[in-house]
Length: 507
Image (tube, rainbow, N blue to C red):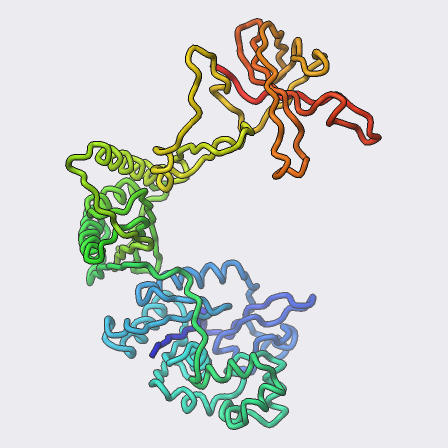
């Protein structure tokens, strides 16, 4: 049986305070504290009416983006209790604490620890534990601190008003008009009656609140394959202690994966500060890692290369190391096979460079089965495509022949101005590129390349490529985009001169 901890929070205040937001060109209450609630104010009430009831009301403008960021930060901090944390907008969280409560001394101790820790950070928190997430959320609105045993959900929420379900103002008003003022009153009616009047969605919500099944929560992060962590009675703050902790956690993580013959491809280290700030660092590897020394080295590289170094503040009270992606390790003969050994060293070097400068900046090139120059090479991550790059077959260059393709190929062909050229398929006699005039003295070509009509739908024109050399010895790879009087026409259907481009430079 799953157990869920629902929580909702707001900032502490001794004076009645509300947060307002514009709705239909009018300011209405978006959130309020306990002091304002005791005065009879409620969410959705116009600000003018609220000021009439309480002239000394403190009003703040809503900042939806900042609220979402704060809720996300609190969710990061709650990862210390369970890896399954889900958002319950606009100001709630769901924690699936199934199998986790005993690590904190039981459900009651876990609940008190969470509430007190958030209270020290300046938040007033409502929290409850139940067998379903909807029931836990309902309890936070009416009976904070409640822990409901499995099967006791219906009895626990029966005396609450129907507004505690959070079904919306229209449904809540409809229930009250029908004489159903409490959740118990609604539950006493037959399900088909409720469905016929208020819809299947509300019937499902009610059933979940009563403990009759539950929809799964949507965790913010996928559950890692392996997790190890270290908690500290006295927070740590020095680089030496952080490095030692990561090294010990790496040993434990490797030992756990080794039992199932797996290695880590993606690792994440999370550092939980005493003030609630959480910092996570991720490294990826090209091959499954099976040695703790490699993990330790990768994280050292990553920590040293951080543009925003770890700020321990008053110290970290927990460090977690997780393997979010693992693979089965294929055993290979590494002592006698020099090729395998070289591959391992190259993969390790790529991992270290990627940890320092980022995996997207370390790439390999893979050949593609196409004759279009800009599509003939695919740039891919070296960590994930190293094996394919080492086995790739590239076109062989003819002996004693000049290269057919330039040493430098532009990502996007650059236009050039050609005053005149030999018609219909001859080269230009001169051209202007980047404001410089180049006189053509030697030419090789043309090499005609037709576009892939089955992919381009006829939108790309036929190209004639030329290898040319100017009077200063510079060599270019240029092409004419389109055929004379064959593919380029103006708006009236008359043929026009095609455009010319430079696509690369030879050595």
